[in-house]
Length: 335
Image (cartoon, rainbow, N blue to C red):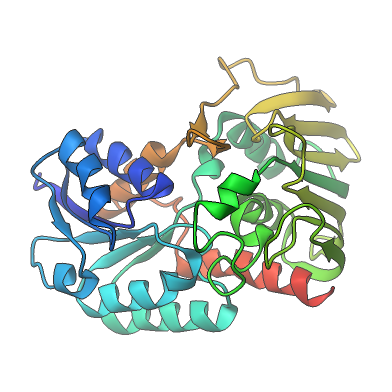
Protein backbone atom coordinates (compact mmCIF):
# COMPACT_ATOMS: atom_id res chain seq x y z
CA UNK A 1 0.00 0.00 0.00
CA UNK A 2 1.29 3.45 -0.86
CA UNK A 3 2.25 5.36 2.31
CA UNK A 4 0.07 8.28 3.37
CA UNK A 5 2.20 11.43 3.44
CA UNK A 6 1.77 13.79 6.39
CA UNK A 7 2.90 17.31 7.20
CA UNK A 8 2.87 18.78 10.71
CA UNK A 9 2.33 22.50 11.32
CA UNK A 10 3.53 23.85 14.64
CA UNK A 11 6.53 22.15 16.27
CA UNK A 12 5.68 22.93 19.88
CA UNK A 13 4.78 20.48 22.65
CA UNK A 14 1.77 19.03 20.82
CA UNK A 15 3.37 19.16 17.38
CA UNK A 16 6.27 17.07 18.66
CA UNK A 17 3.73 14.50 19.90
CA UNK A 18 2.24 14.38 16.40
CA UNK A 19 5.67 13.95 14.83
CA UNK A 20 6.72 11.12 17.15
CA UNK A 21 3.37 9.36 16.76
CA UNK A 22 3.43 9.55 12.96
CA UNK A 23 7.02 8.29 12.74
CA UNK A 24 6.00 5.17 14.70
CA UNK A 25 3.09 4.15 12.43
CA UNK A 26 3.47 1.83 9.45
CA UNK A 27 2.36 3.01 6.01
CA UNK A 28 2.83 6.66 6.91
CA UNK A 29 5.54 9.07 5.87
CA UNK A 30 6.20 12.41 7.53
CA UNK A 31 7.42 14.48 4.61
CA UNK A 32 7.23 18.05 5.92
CA UNK A 33 7.00 20.24 9.01
CA UNK A 34 6.41 23.96 9.42
CA UNK A 35 7.08 26.53 12.12
CA UNK A 36 7.96 30.22 12.09
CA UNK A 37 10.75 29.50 14.58
CA UNK A 38 13.68 27.88 12.73
CA UNK A 39 15.20 26.65 15.99
CA UNK A 40 12.33 24.12 16.17
CA UNK A 41 13.75 22.39 13.09
CA UNK A 42 16.51 20.90 15.23
CA UNK A 43 13.95 18.52 16.69
CA UNK A 44 12.87 17.36 13.23
CA UNK A 45 16.42 16.77 12.11
CA UNK A 46 17.08 14.76 15.25
CA UNK A 47 14.14 12.39 14.80
CA UNK A 48 14.29 12.12 10.99
CA UNK A 49 16.59 14.29 8.85
CA UNK A 50 14.51 13.56 5.74
CA UNK A 51 11.69 15.87 6.91
CA UNK A 52 11.50 19.01 4.76
CA UNK A 53 11.22 22.06 7.02
CA UNK A 54 9.36 25.26 6.13
CA UNK A 55 8.78 28.64 7.75
CA UNK A 56 6.24 29.59 5.07
CA UNK A 57 3.00 27.62 5.51
CA UNK A 58 1.53 28.52 2.13
CA UNK A 59 4.75 27.50 0.39
CA UNK A 60 4.62 24.13 2.15
CA UNK A 61 1.03 23.62 0.97
CA UNK A 62 2.18 23.84 -2.65
CA UNK A 63 3.92 20.48 -2.27
CA UNK A 64 2.14 17.72 -4.20
CA UNK A 65 3.64 15.09 -1.89
CA UNK A 66 1.42 15.95 1.10
CA UNK A 67 -1.83 14.03 1.61
CA UNK A 68 -2.77 15.15 5.14
CA UNK A 69 -1.80 18.24 7.14
CA UNK A 70 -1.98 18.09 10.94
CA UNK A 71 -2.36 21.48 12.62
CA UNK A 72 -0.87 21.95 16.09
CA UNK A 73 -0.55 25.73 16.23
CA UNK A 74 -2.07 28.21 18.72
CA UNK A 75 -5.86 27.94 18.75
CA UNK A 76 -6.54 31.23 17.05
CA UNK A 77 -4.81 30.04 13.85
CA UNK A 78 -6.63 26.71 13.48
CA UNK A 79 -9.54 27.85 11.32
CA UNK A 80 -7.64 29.80 8.67
CA UNK A 81 -4.86 27.23 8.41
CA UNK A 82 -7.33 24.37 8.01
CA UNK A 83 -9.25 26.25 5.32
CA UNK A 84 -6.04 27.09 3.42
CA UNK A 85 -4.91 23.46 3.54
CA UNK A 86 -8.23 22.06 2.27
CA UNK A 87 -8.33 24.60 -0.54
CA UNK A 88 -4.79 23.49 -1.42
CA UNK A 89 -6.09 19.93 -1.86
CA UNK A 90 -5.02 18.45 1.49
CA UNK A 91 -7.00 16.53 4.08
CA UNK A 92 -6.68 18.08 7.56
CA UNK A 93 -6.35 16.96 11.17
CA UNK A 94 -6.80 19.82 13.67
CA UNK A 95 -5.75 19.72 17.31
CA UNK A 96 -8.31 20.69 19.91
CA UNK A 97 -10.03 23.06 19.99
CA UNK A 98 -11.25 22.84 16.40
CA UNK A 99 -11.50 26.65 16.45
CA UNK A 100 -12.46 29.37 18.92
CA UNK A 101 -15.98 30.05 17.59
CA UNK A 102 -18.78 28.08 15.96
CA UNK A 103 -18.73 30.65 13.14
CA UNK A 104 -15.16 29.58 12.33
CA UNK A 105 -16.15 25.91 12.63
CA UNK A 106 -19.02 26.44 10.18
CA UNK A 107 -16.61 27.93 7.64
CA UNK A 108 -14.22 25.00 8.06
CA UNK A 109 -16.99 22.44 7.57
CA UNK A 110 -18.31 24.31 4.55
CA UNK A 111 -14.89 24.31 2.87
CA UNK A 112 -14.52 20.59 3.67
CA UNK A 113 -17.81 19.94 1.91
CA UNK A 114 -16.98 22.20 -1.04
CA UNK A 115 -13.51 20.73 -1.62
CA UNK A 116 -14.28 17.12 -0.73
CA UNK A 117 -11.35 17.12 1.69
CA UNK A 118 -11.78 15.40 5.04
CA UNK A 119 -11.54 17.38 8.26
CA UNK A 120 -10.67 15.48 11.45
CA UNK A 121 -10.43 16.78 15.02
CA UNK A 122 -7.98 15.40 17.59
CA UNK A 123 -9.89 13.64 20.39
CA UNK A 124 -7.32 11.12 21.57
CA UNK A 125 -8.89 10.73 25.01
CA UNK A 126 -11.74 8.75 23.47
CA UNK A 127 -9.19 5.94 23.17
CA UNK A 128 -8.25 5.89 26.88
CA UNK A 129 -8.83 2.42 28.30
CA UNK A 130 -11.18 3.61 31.08
CA UNK A 131 -13.11 5.73 28.55
CA UNK A 132 -13.58 2.72 26.26
CA UNK A 133 -14.84 0.64 29.20
CA UNK A 134 -17.34 3.27 30.31
CA UNK A 135 -18.47 3.92 26.73
CA UNK A 136 -19.36 0.24 26.40
CA UNK A 137 -21.33 0.31 29.64
CA UNK A 138 -23.25 3.42 28.53
CA UNK A 139 -23.92 2.04 25.04
CA UNK A 140 -25.40 -1.08 26.62
CA UNK A 141 -27.42 1.10 29.03
CA UNK A 142 -25.94 -0.74 32.03
CA UNK A 143 -26.30 2.32 34.28
CA UNK A 144 -29.93 2.97 33.32
CA UNK A 145 -31.11 6.57 33.29
CA UNK A 146 -28.33 9.01 34.16
CA UNK A 147 -29.36 11.69 36.63
CA UNK A 148 -26.12 13.46 37.58
CA UNK A 149 -22.66 13.95 36.12
CA UNK A 150 -19.74 15.67 37.84
CA UNK A 151 -16.58 16.70 35.99
CA UNK A 152 -13.53 18.12 37.77
CA UNK A 153 -10.36 19.45 36.13
CA UNK A 154 -8.07 20.47 38.96
CA UNK A 155 -4.66 21.14 37.45
CA UNK A 156 -1.58 23.26 38.00
CA UNK A 157 -0.17 25.68 35.46
CA UNK A 158 2.71 27.78 36.71
CA UNK A 159 3.50 31.38 35.91
CA UNK A 160 6.32 30.06 33.70
CA UNK A 161 3.78 28.05 31.68
CA UNK A 162 2.13 31.30 30.62
CA UNK A 163 5.18 33.59 30.52
CA UNK A 164 7.22 31.29 28.26
CA UNK A 165 4.63 31.63 25.50
CA UNK A 166 3.14 34.65 23.74
CA UNK A 167 -0.20 32.92 23.11
CA UNK A 168 -1.02 31.08 26.34
CA UNK A 169 -3.31 33.18 28.48
CA UNK A 170 -4.02 35.44 25.49
CA UNK A 171 -7.75 35.86 24.91
CA UNK A 172 -7.59 36.12 21.12
CA UNK A 173 -5.19 33.19 20.60
CA UNK A 174 -6.04 30.76 23.42
CA UNK A 175 -9.65 31.74 24.05
CA UNK A 176 -9.91 30.38 27.57
CA UNK A 177 -9.04 27.48 29.86
CA UNK A 178 -12.09 25.57 28.62
CA UNK A 179 -10.53 25.47 25.15
CA UNK A 180 -7.16 24.26 26.44
CA UNK A 181 -7.34 22.26 29.66
CA UNK A 182 -11.02 21.24 29.55
CA UNK A 183 -11.81 20.68 25.86
CA UNK A 184 -11.38 16.88 25.94
CA UNK A 185 -13.58 16.63 29.03
CA UNK A 186 -16.37 18.63 27.39
CA UNK A 187 -16.13 16.42 24.31
CA UNK A 188 -16.73 13.32 26.44
CA UNK A 189 -19.62 14.90 28.34
CA UNK A 190 -21.59 15.77 25.21
CA UNK A 191 -20.59 12.50 23.48
CA UNK A 192 -22.10 10.53 26.36
CA UNK A 193 -24.94 12.73 27.64
CA UNK A 194 -26.00 14.87 24.69
CA UNK A 195 -25.75 18.53 23.83
CA UNK A 196 -25.61 21.11 26.60
CA UNK A 197 -28.96 22.88 26.61
CA UNK A 198 -28.48 25.14 29.63
CA UNK A 199 -25.52 26.46 31.59
CA UNK A 200 -25.00 28.78 34.57
CA UNK A 201 -21.38 29.77 35.03
CA UNK A 202 -19.00 31.74 37.23
CA UNK A 203 -15.35 32.36 36.34
CA UNK A 204 -12.51 34.46 37.71
CA UNK A 205 -8.78 35.07 37.34
CA UNK A 206 -7.26 34.82 40.81
CA UNK A 207 -3.67 33.55 40.66
CA UNK A 208 -2.22 34.37 37.23
CA UNK A 209 -1.49 37.58 35.32
CA UNK A 210 -3.39 36.46 32.20
CA UNK A 211 -6.36 37.59 30.09
CA UNK A 212 -8.33 34.35 30.52
CA UNK A 213 -9.86 32.66 33.57
CA UNK A 214 -7.91 30.39 35.88
CA UNK A 215 -10.93 29.11 37.84
CA UNK A 216 -14.54 28.39 36.92
CA UNK A 217 -17.67 26.47 37.89
CA UNK A 218 -20.73 25.72 35.77
CA UNK A 219 -24.06 23.99 36.32
CA UNK A 220 -25.23 22.16 33.19
CA UNK A 221 -28.32 20.51 31.75
CA UNK A 222 -27.84 17.97 28.95
CA UNK A 223 -30.28 17.01 26.21
CA UNK A 224 -30.50 13.50 27.72
CA UNK A 225 -32.10 15.06 30.80
CA UNK A 226 -29.05 14.59 33.03
CA UNK A 227 -27.82 17.44 35.19
CA UNK A 228 -24.13 18.14 35.53
CA UNK A 229 -21.50 20.19 37.27
CA UNK A 230 -18.20 21.26 35.77
CA UNK A 231 -15.40 22.74 37.88
CA UNK A 232 -12.01 23.68 36.51
CA UNK A 233 -8.88 25.51 37.61
CA UNK A 234 -5.20 25.88 36.79
CA UNK A 235 -4.52 27.10 40.34
CA UNK A 236 -3.79 23.80 42.10
CA UNK A 237 -0.63 24.08 44.20
CA UNK A 238 2.57 22.57 42.79
CA UNK A 239 1.19 19.83 40.47
CA UNK A 240 -1.93 18.46 38.82
CA UNK A 241 -4.39 16.90 41.27
CA UNK A 242 -7.42 15.45 39.47
CA UNK A 243 -9.11 15.08 36.09
CA UNK A 244 -12.31 13.13 36.61
CA UNK A 245 -15.85 12.38 35.49
CA UNK A 246 -18.35 10.83 37.93
CA UNK A 247 -21.55 9.32 36.50
CA UNK A 248 -24.57 8.56 38.69
CA UNK A 249 -27.26 6.40 37.13
CA UNK A 250 -30.28 4.49 38.43
CA UNK A 251 -28.37 1.18 38.17
CA UNK A 252 -24.83 2.22 38.91
CA UNK A 253 -22.12 4.71 39.73
CA UNK A 254 -18.75 5.10 38.00
CA UNK A 255 -15.90 7.52 38.55
CA UNK A 256 -13.16 7.80 35.96
CA UNK A 257 -10.33 9.63 37.61
CA UNK A 258 -6.67 9.73 38.27
CA UNK A 259 -5.23 13.04 37.14
CA UNK A 260 -6.07 12.62 33.46
CA UNK A 261 -9.12 10.33 33.05
CA UNK A 262 -6.60 7.50 33.06
CA UNK A 263 -7.91 5.35 35.93
CA UNK A 264 -11.17 3.89 37.14
CA UNK A 265 -11.51 5.16 40.71
CA UNK A 266 -14.96 3.70 41.44
CA UNK A 267 -17.20 1.15 39.72
CA UNK A 268 -20.48 -0.13 41.19
CA UNK A 269 -22.90 -1.20 38.45
CA UNK A 270 -25.75 -3.68 38.91
CA UNK A 271 -24.88 -7.12 37.45
CA UNK A 272 -21.96 -5.60 35.53
CA UNK A 273 -18.59 -5.82 37.28
CA UNK A 274 -15.66 -3.65 36.33
CA UNK A 275 -13.94 -5.08 33.24
CA UNK A 276 -10.75 -6.97 33.98
CA UNK A 277 -9.06 -6.44 30.65
CA UNK A 278 -5.62 -5.45 31.78
CA UNK A 279 -4.08 -2.21 33.02
CA UNK A 280 -6.41 0.79 33.03
CA UNK A 281 -3.72 3.37 33.71
CA UNK A 282 -2.97 5.09 30.38
CA UNK A 283 0.37 6.82 29.83
CA UNK A 284 -0.02 10.59 30.11
CA UNK A 285 1.50 13.36 28.04
CA UNK A 286 4.72 14.62 29.62
CA UNK A 287 5.64 18.08 28.34
CA UNK A 288 8.63 18.54 30.64
CA UNK A 289 7.41 21.44 32.76
CA UNK A 290 3.79 20.21 32.93
CA UNK A 291 1.59 17.20 32.22
CA UNK A 292 -1.60 16.74 30.19
CA UNK A 293 -4.19 14.16 29.21
CA UNK A 294 -3.42 10.64 27.99
CA UNK A 295 -0.93 10.14 25.18
CA UNK A 296 -3.05 8.24 22.66
CA UNK A 297 -2.27 10.29 19.55
CA UNK A 298 -0.74 7.24 17.88
CA UNK A 299 -3.94 5.22 18.31
CA UNK A 300 -6.00 8.10 16.96
CA UNK A 301 -3.77 8.53 13.90
CA UNK A 302 -4.02 4.79 13.21
CA UNK A 303 -7.81 5.04 13.32
CA UNK A 304 -7.78 7.95 10.88
CA UNK A 305 -5.52 6.02 8.52
CA UNK A 306 -7.88 3.03 8.79
CA UNK A 307 -10.72 5.40 7.94
CA UNK A 308 -9.03 6.10 4.62
CA UNK A 309 -7.82 2.60 3.81
CA UNK A 310 -10.57 0.40 5.26
CA UNK A 311 -13.54 2.80 5.45
CA UNK A 312 -13.59 2.36 9.22
CA UNK A 313 -15.77 4.59 11.39
CA UNK A 314 -15.02 6.00 14.80
CA UNK A 315 -12.90 9.11 14.33
CA UNK A 316 -14.21 12.60 15.03
CA UNK A 317 -14.84 14.69 11.94
CA UNK A 318 -15.56 18.40 11.70
CA UNK A 319 -19.32 18.40 12.23
CA UNK A 320 -18.96 16.41 15.45
CA UNK A 321 -15.88 18.32 16.58
CA UNK A 322 -17.85 21.56 16.33
CA UNK A 323 -20.13 20.39 19.14
CA UNK A 324 -17.35 20.90 21.69
CA UNK A 325 -16.81 24.49 20.54
CA UNK A 326 -20.56 25.13 20.58
CA UNK A 327 -20.80 23.79 24.14
CA UNK A 328 -17.82 25.87 25.24
CA UNK A 329 -19.40 29.01 23.77
CA UNK A 330 -22.63 28.28 25.65
CA UNK A 331 -20.80 27.83 28.95
CA UNK A 332 -18.88 31.09 28.52
CA UNK A 333 -21.99 32.94 27.32
CA UNK A 334 -23.80 32.06 30.55
CA UNK A 335 -21.29 33.95 32.73
